[in-house]
Length: 242
Image (cartoon, rainbow, N blue to C red):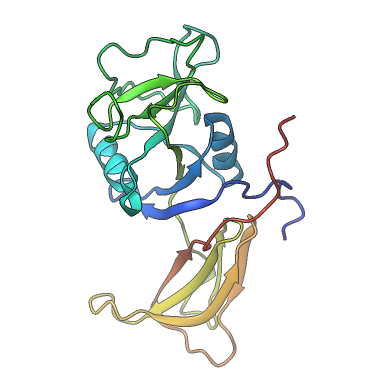
């Protein structure tokens, strides 16, 4: 375990992902139901934030990918929030995109204050259009008509870097890792065929940058990629409410 990594590792289970958005290459994960603050904290532990939505295409992709994942209709926390009642909304990653997909009449900051934003489940009891945005209060919100509400984590693209060129003897690689995820390097000489084979290098991520090279006796090839494999379930300490 990386000693510099926070003690509260993955206190929320990962229900789906990583899924790669085809335009940006960003990776997305679906977390188990939890209040917005805990979901955002888990996203930061993983190296990202709750998702920022910058366009209708991104909105459609995120909701289409996770709004019915595994046949379960759910609402989705995104990174839009406000710090003061009735104040302006901002994205948790500092994005400045002005795109919004509010349900008509929202946001209304009702129920004593609703600082966080979610995409509404298709199965909501009001018949609202699925995927439209609504402000909601957490934690401990008495309003449960949109449950379950799950966080969608947005992470930067996964990159495999070369510390030594593939043509210069045994190549050395490095890539960032997520704690509890497995990483495998694959290789091929032919991108057209897509015949990727295991290069014999696998590691369990710990949140640090993984640096490795091909095992002895494995011939170098022209192309390499890293495959990110999520854990069956996340592990770690519970959130400290303090």
